[in-house]
Length: 170
Image 1 (cartoon, rainbow, N blue to C red):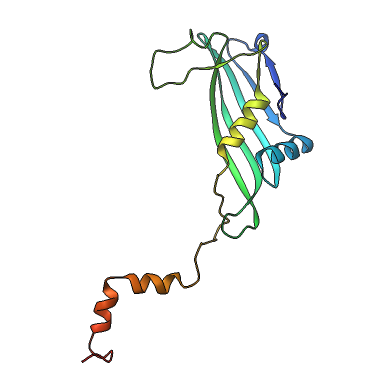
Image 2: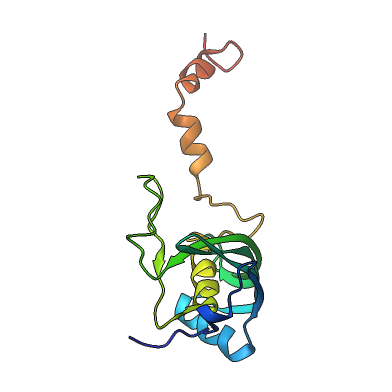
């Protein structure tokens, strides 16, 4: 297994009963590597403000991710910047099966590996999940040449319009 591009391990022993706050900020090299990995031109800013709290057999990570990314418009193929603000919510457990709540609709918590939770990997994962798979530059509209004319011809009302008096029809 390869090391994550953005890694900020938090040993379980550092998490108090009241929880712990961490801010994860990606540096320039990490942002460039993440952008390559995600197939986007650039990441100008990436930060996550997280709270890590124990809850029974689970460790819950909540907070908010903020990023400024450059994506390529699927309509114009031009790069454009997009601001991202997404909530972060994920649970971990040393024994995921035992930490299941019994709710069939709830996901099992992720497994704790090596006695720590990698908050950098969590940040990168939530960034990847928040990217628009079909990014569109604001104001960009897809239209094919002649599409409006074709739509008018295909309209069932086009025939009625042609029969309207004064259009050369008698």
